[in-house]
Image (tube, rainbow, N blue to C red; front, side, top):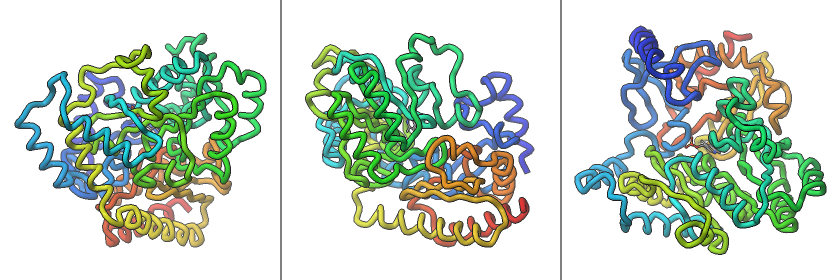
Length: 427
Ligand SMILES: *Cc1c(COP(=O)(O)O)cnc(C)c1O
């Protein structure tokens, strides 16, 4: 079934560390070798052995309307004829910024970058420059890309591979990052009591989605807003995952809590390498060349990526998009809840909008500790069964399942059938 993928993986391993360009693509934590993808369309991906899968990885989030969305492809093809990069201002960059500012009211100004990692790294530098303070608070199991300051008890790849800290991150730098449990107000209160004057920023995923999906408990985001305002720290919402996914205006619209800075990525690029950070004019005007906080990029605001992103911004503003996404995701979750009742396995389900997680634990998952109570051996076997059944989910317990507008009811039914068979084999 995977013959050609196996050969290509072996060849890739000779030239790429671990055979992949990003650890999340490795299937090592589910005791498999990765399948190589040839093409994708709508809700499906196709591998080089000719296998077809219903895709719930969605390029890790960007494909909110499925693969090869026609408006995106058409607009990018047109731009392609005009040039791929100029290193000079283009109108589409302003249009993109206008759209973002319209959709996310807390964003007056925005800087486009090339990845989510760049967005969070730059936002923290800005917060430090703006406050004149050095320390940051982050949450255990939240993932903010691979910037040095964030590889301290991080989610996603580091959680999957069991590498909470990375060699190569200097201790002096790591000591400036304070990691506290997600949803734990008391822990944050204590940090602020002790070192409030040194805290430049609190950064978090307003819905954690890199330790599996973990929603903020009621009042948690409001608490963070209040304490950061009182203490003069910058509140950064890392909405690289949640932006344009849980609502057009992201988690901050969904939960009605306003951060000072917002980081974006994934959906904003419609599958091109893009990130962005933005916020209040007062803070953003500290960014070079307007202000002294340096930030730059040869390919930032790339015309192909901006053109794709602009089409994405139009698509998400169509009538009823988020209702449809929610209905489909609710349908899937309800089916999963039914399986949970029928099947004799420890299962726990979390959902926020079109982000879902199935954990192999009896505990309600509210933070990293409860997320990691999941039986990852069971997940590995579940993953293998799903893959062979034609359902492509993340090769890790600590990633989300992404529902897109391209998933049909029939495909969701098929997914639930394969899920049922996959789980029953584990009983
Ligand atoms: C994916 C992700 C990032 C990193 O984005 P890259 O484009 O992979 O660098 C940062 N924060 C969150 C919340 C993410 O989900």
